[in-house]
Image (tube, rainbow, N blue to C red; front, side, top):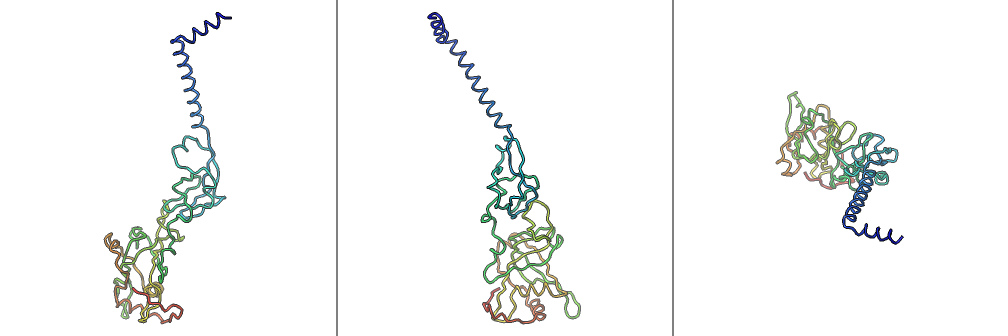
Length: 273
């Protein structure tokens, strides 16, 4: 027995033996670590996906979520939301949409408070929302964007049937471009056709008896034989941020004379142009 112990001591104190054993142990450790990481990488994980297409600014509800299994290695390379509690009650960010069966990426999902300001929140005091109909042609191939400043021309005829066409309102900012379903055209990666241009315009009554820009535009939109035409300008025109105002007193008079006067007793504040 003593000889066996001595032989073992000599074996394990031999430098060559120690080196070989160390190499074997190192290989075993590396193999175990590799297998552990490999199993982690290829083992499937359950993740939520969209049960239907969810458009920009829409709230994500419980019924909008399904579950699938995907390779864990994919999760390590992409910022994918795996927790249902980080989805239900949240909203799809603007400028994107989540298709049916699509994963929820963290950049696509935000809290409601982090959504860009709604149209209503961008309307100043004394202003109101105004819209008129457009199409892909009148917007020059959907080339008018929120934030752009454009001019609005008026097309009509005079009392003897001659064409009247001129600048009516100048330097008015586009708040949004909507499609026929009242969805923002640029809030999705899918193609949407423009149907409405939205603006914020002065709407309070004026002390001088003149109609506000809102009254003039609304009247021109509703009056038979009158058409509002959006006319784009360049980048410098938008950056100049000039005052929004009536560009032609002649056109103002043509519209005003066809509108009845209705005093606004509840809101006599002057609305400047």
